[in-house]
Image (tube, rainbow, N blue to C red; front, side, top):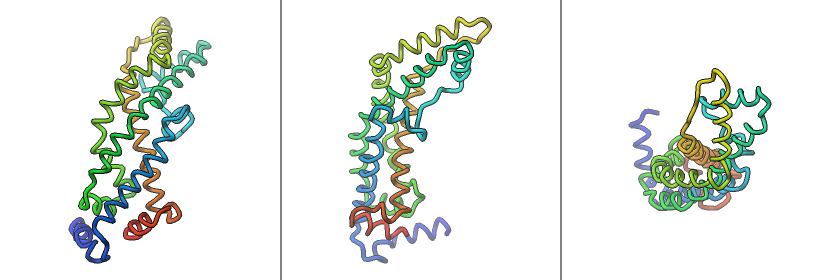
Length: 220
């Protein structure tokens, strides 16, 4: 279907279906709120990132050589602690996300909702990402910095990097782990919301309210 044809379908959707225009917006809001409540809340728990292979934060490329070097010299347990500490900080930060998401969801208009409804399986998540990523980065970054101190990640990584930089002939590293983990935490949050959105779009059984069933029947 061409873009012009799709836009025509979007513009005439309420007339064709006899649907109350606000119902579509409310259905999308409910779907996103379910994604936030069900999936994002998982990430805030201990091991929400660390034990979830979909979003587990691994090391940035410049630190993968650090990880391997530590393991090669018998410091595998220190390397494992370093990765765990990064994930613990992300779990802490995501607790700050819900109010920002809820505010963005409230602002969805009927026009937004129509375009989201007929968009790809992650259209609502993309909408949310466009409107929250800057605010979430600003919120996550200081929390992660503080969390590094709280969970001991700063000390662990100071130790790791000091040990690595003391190995003969290696290129010394000094990465910005706060920025890296902030971005990885954001990626994990949006990934989990998109999973719930896709489930509601593609699995009728996941539409657990009358509103979800009515609205998403329009895109089937």
